[in-house]
Length: 378
Image 1: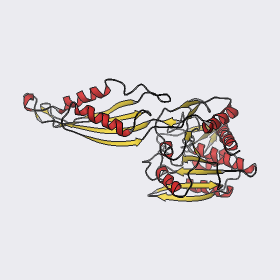
Image 2: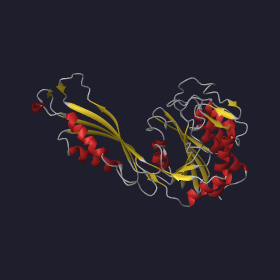
Image 3: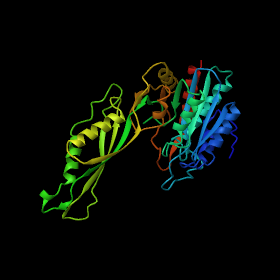
């Protein structure tokens, strides 16, 4: 699928072309064809990277530094519910653009493409601009940004700074920049006991009691008090399950699931070790299954973050809050290679029915990204 966009300096037609591709993860549905065609016409060297069933794209214009990269994803979550318009129609009503992915994050990609087009139209530019675009952010995130970053490193394409276009603003455009994210670790815990009759508890070893004592110890006090740029880490018990349908049987095992969102005072491994040691004080026999979704990261305020803040202030008059809250994003992978920050649209309707963005806000975002390019590549 190829769509020629008459005016790539305006993010609206770019966003509409992307929204009209039903790229519900892991499907691409032509979304990256649209972007590849646009960037090729602007003079970018485009490399298509398919890993597994996932379509990814890396594009770069320029060969020298400084090198700034825009990162994002063309995949979207399922539609769900009853929309007032075609979720893949890219319709504009009363100055508002509707569609799945309008703010998360095809609108952000369109704004950066338009900013790049504006920057290049102004004349020769020093440095390099690149795009890292995946189709696997809303999915398992295995064959997307992680694999593209490995390819970029192997081919000498690691940037000096990366800007992720996730919808970071809670209320109005410009009010928040993400300079870091908490890490996330999932832990499955199974405590084993000895099955028996409830009337003869001395002949059994109740794993439910041991599990409850272990969970009480884990949740008795906050994990920490936070750090300079992060709020306190949070341990949440997300499930307790025994599966016992009998009323007169002490079960043989009991299970629980935990999630810990943690700050830069910890690593996933250190928290797993803490959980293991704590549970060991209350149960002799148990098993942990663990999965680290991402480690915490921080891009400390400095020249690159200052450029982004200055561009936001110049375009909107708003001074953004520098924040590290919220969930995870692909920035957690990028942080292993270069400094990274996140800034994009207001995320109030992301993943919702009738996801939307005001057209004026979309154009203002392009102005901000244009300001970033102008300052970074000056």
